[in-house]
Image (tube, rainbow, N blue to C red; front, side, top):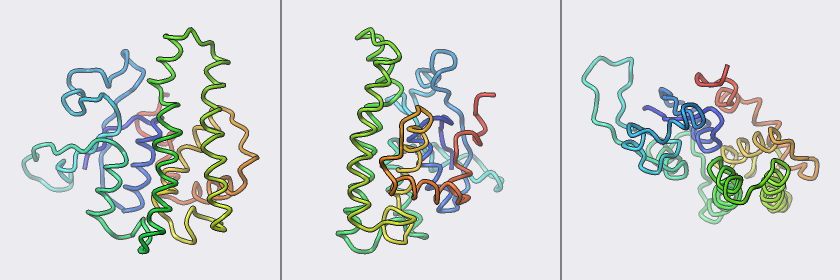
Length: 226
């Protein structure tokens, strides 16, 4: 498989975690969201993903250990769709509970992050409000922190109500952990005070010690800014 990724992209980060948890071989193709005016805007990449976003996953890309003709690209975009595909195509290890109600709970956590937190703090949104509303850095960070605290506060209540310890759901690693850890990483990068969220912090500190998570970290990616 071939993952079109940017080392700082939260959405790409979560996909890297799931690929690692599933022990799937993949190659990263860098799409730098800042350099050269944003490589995601190039005609070449827009032919891969017409939204000009990362990640994109080419599931037909060959295993480079196997000699043979290159397959025609088969692209999946949107991190949620990619992760659901990987869960269905590679069911072991399972990253969703068996019980349907508990699956819904895990998906609730992922959607708080993917729908209500991350999009409002995405690079293109921050650029838009900065350029369109003449925001300075302080105002931009106020916006950024507002949506983070709103989301983390809700997640913290969910985690406490479930008695979560090392993971978002019981003692099972799920896609919720793959969504949560990149969002906390970014919050820390932008100096959000995370002390009000002890359950979130406990899960974060545990998961970042696991190879699937640590290997997916932005600072270890091949396209990291030197």
